[in-house]
Amino acid sequence: MTGLYQTIATDTPAPQVLRVTLNRPEVANAFNTQMMRELLALWQELELAASAEQPRCIVLTGAGSRAFCAGADLKERNTLTEAQWMAQHVVIEQQFQALIECPIPVIAAVNGHAFAGGLEMLLACDFAYAVKDARFALTEVTLGLMPGAGGTQTLPRAVGERRAKEIILTGKPFAAAEALHWGVVTALYEPDALMSAALETASRIAANAPLAVAEARRSIHIGLQRDLAAGMRFEIECYNRLVPTEDRREGVSAFNEKRKAQFKGR
Image 1 (spheres, helix red, strand yellow):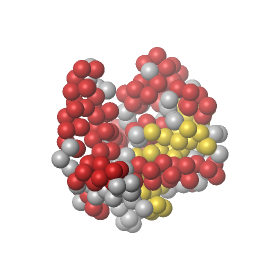
Image 2 (tube, rainbow, N blue to C red; image 1 turned 120 degrees about the vertical axis):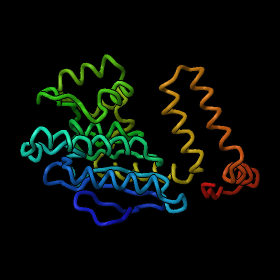
Image 3 (spheres, one colour; image 1 turned 60 degrees about the vertical axis):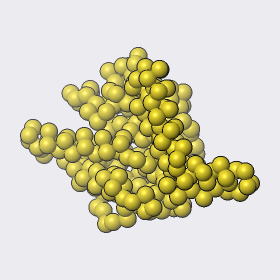
Image 4 (cartoon, one colour; image 1 turned 180 degrees about the horizontal axis):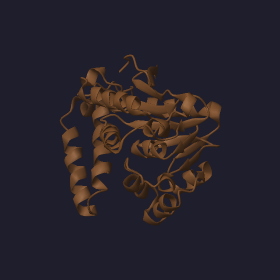
């Protein structure tokens, strides 16, 4: 989780909070094959880590103030054959799926523009905060492509089918105020306040019972793919998994003893 990387950087700016920074500011943090491989390895490492070693929340951001992520590095892609392009895209698909399935909540701190795959990266996170001057777009159709990292699925879930069709089929950029209004992001901040706000929220999540957080996330994510009755049944399955845990007993005891709970993820 704190290994040597060429295209990303990691640090722990708060207890049990991991910050992951897309670190190619010279190209607006566009992702190349190497970045996708490094992010995939990171998400896989987090999934396999022992619970005691895991962070309890992640903040994903970009280096610099220009962009969160401009999407795929088209200069690299311009050198690829069709076969190489499709092989690279398999790595991209694996990375995005691993991000969505990461067992730890991921907050996007969108420090600048998020275009194409950069917007898809944001949408793969649990929720996002952004700077007030950020702009967003899924521009793939203007290049003869279409969103291929989940955008046709994650964007409608955030903004609704009709709005998603407008955004994707026009390729037209939209402003941060629209992103907030439509539900792409949940809050806007001045640039110097963005990271502190994201870290404050991440720390608040990290202080909660990690098993409870994980089950609540699963219930929301999977329940939304089912009808209401089936979703409520799944919610109870998740709820019942928490009843015999040490954290549930600790939380109730701490409340009654008027002290701060010390959760251990057991």
